Every structure is written in C-alpha cells, then in structure tokens.
Length: 535
Image (cartoon, rainbow, N blue to C red; front, side, top):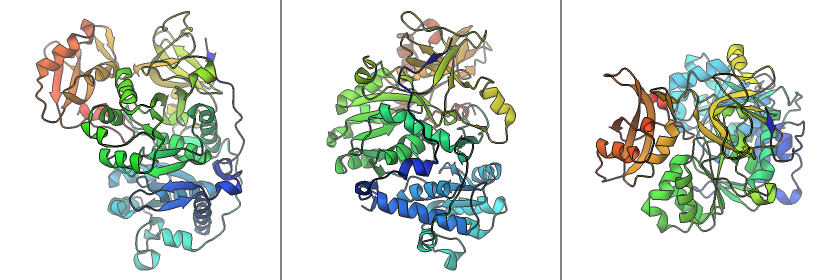
C-alpha cells in the first residue's frame, strides 16, 4: 500500500526558479544581506545579487547562450557562485555543477556528457579547467575565470567582463515543468555518475515543500559550508535561504576552527551539515572555546546520523538537532524531521535514527525487494524492511541521455525507486536501514554498514569509521570489515575494535576484519565512498 505525507499539500507555482525566488521580493527586502564572505568581510545585498544575476544573464545571452544550452560551474562556495548559477538559469540555460575536487579528465567527462559549451571557474582551479576545456574542444573564450585577468589580457573572460557590460537580462520562454534547470551528477557511490535532469518545477517544488518544515526565516543567519555544487547545498542552502530572505555566511570548505569562528562572529542561527561535521562537534575539545549560543537549529543530511551522536551535539551546543533524507534524483529532500513536529503534526520529535516524515505533496511505498509486494504501515513498532519508493513533484525528469537507467529508477506509476532499504512506523515516519546494494550478506543474514559505523563512532578512541563487505580468503564468504581512523594520540588495536563491536551486536553483525587508515574517503556531501575502500 502507498501512504501520503502527513503534512498538508503546499502550492507549487508554475514559474521559473528566478521568478519563484525573486519575482515577489519587496522593496524593504532588497537592502537585506543575502551573502557574506567571512574571509574578506564583503557583503552582498539582495538588490546587488539580483542586479548581478541579471547582468550575468545578459552577458550570457550576448554570447548566444540561452534555452537549450548548458554551462558548467567549477567552483567552491563563494558569493559569486550564486550570481553565476542563477544568472545561467535566468538566461534560460542549464547549469551543470561540477565537483570542485575533480581532476581535468573528470571535468572533461562531465562537460562532454552534459553537452556544456561554456565553463565558469576560479583561478585555483584554472589549470584543470583549461585542460578539460581543451580536451572537449572548446576555445579559450568559453572558459570564464571569475578572478582572472580578463578577456583582453588572457582570452578568458572574468567577472568584470560579465558584470561590466551591464546588459539587460533576456526575455526567455520555456515550460518550467519540462525545461531542465540543472544537471548535477549522481555521486557514483554505486556506479558510473549520471546526469540528473532537474526541471525548474523540481527545484521550485522542493523549496516550497521545505518552507513550512525548515522553520527558516528572514531573521536567520545560515552558515553555508555544504557545497553549492551538490544538490543538498544547492537547494537546502542556496535556494531555500534566498527564498526565505535569510543571510548566508559562505565558506569554500570545511575547516573546524573557521566554522566555529564564523558561527561566533556572525551570530549564525542555523547550520546544515553532514555527519562528519557532527563527529567533530561532538568530540573535539576546541568546540568549548567558542560562543555558539546563537545557534538554535542544526540539520544533518547526505548520510545517516546516529541518534547518540546527534543527541551529543544537541546537548553540547544546546540546540535542536534534526535530520533529513534525500538524493539528487529527488531535488533532493524527500523526508525531514521538521523544526516543530508538535505544532505541525501533534507528535513528538522522532529519534535521530529516523529521517522524519515524507515532505508535502509526496507519496511513499515500502516494497519487499524479493517479492515486489508492498509492506503496509504497522499498527505498532516498525514495519519489515523494504525498498523506499517516492512519488511527487520533486522527482527528477530522468537521467540525461539514459532511458534505460531512467526506466530502471522511475516506474510507470511515477515512483522513484531509491535503492535504500527503510522501515516505517505507524505515523509514516521513515527509518533508513541502508543502501540496498551496500547491505553485507553474512551467512544469509543482512548486515547494515551504517549501523556498525554509527556504533564504532561511539568509541572514545575512534574519530571516524566505515564498514564494507569483503570476501574472506579462508571461507570465501562475505564478512564485515571496518576501516577505522583513530583519535589523535590514541592507542587502539584491531582486536579491541572487534571486541567492542561484538559486545554490542548480534553475532552475525560482528566486525571480522579491521584496517586502520588516516582518513575515510568521502564525497563532498559527506557520503562514504565505499568503492574507494574496495580498491
């Protein structure tokens, strides 16, 4: 059986992203701070941001970029990212956001696959950007280096070239429901990255779905350390904050000291993080050196957050800790613990081991992957595990130029098969068990890596961990293997790790091999790159 979101449906306007975010901005909102660069102290108002967006759109149009064209963005979080990203959408073109850590061949692969005809970057990434542009056959003027010397000196246009022309934004026409606004690429943790085609309606819908649940207001100051090039940062931070007229304190990368300083100095009220940041906030002694009292809400996403770890952060920082769930293919948020479950649903907050309830305007199913049968909502407790399916206006259009992968993911009824195993309680609150493809099968039993990883992080001598299934050389069976990062100066043996886990789990969930490493490989959004651990 399918079940609907317990939240009331929200209105989803049939407009472009630009019109949705800025079309109704009031005069008294134009002077509000939109973006803060804590490094330089520079502040961008909403008036200045909209002016810059229009100028970027006008310059792109003068270069023949419009509906049907794709422009790549290779950049960490900087204020100019917002101007360029929304300028591309304002011009009617499609933005493909590229991981700022990519090598030249990886950049070229995405440029080629997406059909991008222009790339925008910054000087620290110019070398790999130039190599990628050359590899796909684009000329020098197709590479914009925002902080570069400019077109006259280097052939590469810069921000001054884009903004200085002060060309008016073009008049464009397209169907928001079918026109592709962005082409992020799936993380590739379970296979080859694929272009995720998200329409203007997809992005508008997800911000509208989040609005009543986030609790974000114009008075909030939000720290933006999650990368804008990833769909989590793009929607939950960049678009949602701008829609709510909040202020974004923009960080190009995570550094614990700078993160804490920025929260303290800019009186940050809301933070969106991935679990690795929660580990640092819960365990690092330096956190106590900063005044973080302005923070009232923190939300974790992109990977499972353990309840004990989340509660430790909430207690230490005296804030409301929440969790959400989603994926690029869902624009990305499909489930969330709201800022006030009592007021919205008459229910207490669920444990942080859950991902909350389906967002408005969506329908869920939990399906037994072995039989294809629907798993019903339970009368009490949790349902049997099954694959989570989601249907709603935030479901992607499909994978770019990949009809088979699209058909394998979105069924004829419009349900997106997430590939995540989940359980559900009587209220429809969802608990993610693990990736369907990442479950370890030990002697016929299913062992969820995320459960063991969360347990390992409760050990005082463990800074980080990851668990995968490996084939045991002696038995030929798949066994759970833990990769462990020790806390600085900590002494810890493999036997101690295995004994710790064995004392707390069923026999089939025991860790049976341990390897100590310097760092767990993760994507920019915080997901463990298990494929890298298998090499």
